Image (cartoon, rainbow, N blue to C red; front, side, top):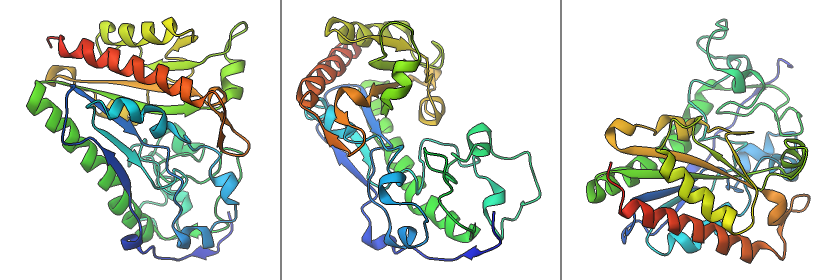
Length: 296
């Protein structure tokens, strides 16, 4: 990477970090998290990126909050990130930070920090796009990125934890459904016969009781969808970090094939969007009603 130093400061007062829905009238022991739907780019970031907005959006979970919004409106709290994933990825651990991206990282010579996603450029601060192009043409200021994490990452997770705590206070336990989408190309490659419509990640049956997974999966299958368990995604940071079964906190990651509801090239909904949304919300409410009778 070039030795050029990239210095900028973001005016976070201009940004609405997340949207929240139905956080007061809670009727189910369930929280919806949508961490990757954000399409808001700080102008200062865009001025210092060498990629187009279209490419920066290539790993975005477009419209996922809208797909599940009707279920939220029935009494399920939801938090949805507004800020683009390519600026800060809130579904990564903070330690997944590549020190070689910075000209002033305090531990630039250490190679044992971060993780696999960090090493391939997709840590908490992305180095590359989904098309494997470098986002920056120089080295970042570590202090600026520290501020990113404080203003965006911490803000999202603080609110998510507050919602979980609120649900636990009312019901004694909580299920977090982390909602994502996946490229249709991956879904077609993973199986020889039918493409994958949904992937449900439970950390290989560790993040929630099988009954919770099964009721959700059955509802989707009854609507005619092909479901894969834990492949290609078993659950990322939110699914892992918030999973505390002994404390009555369960998690599951839902991945939706983007080809079911949108044109991935131009980021536009297709004619099947409404029907898919109805089916997903039906499955979420089936899970919610099951949880009302669940004893942890």
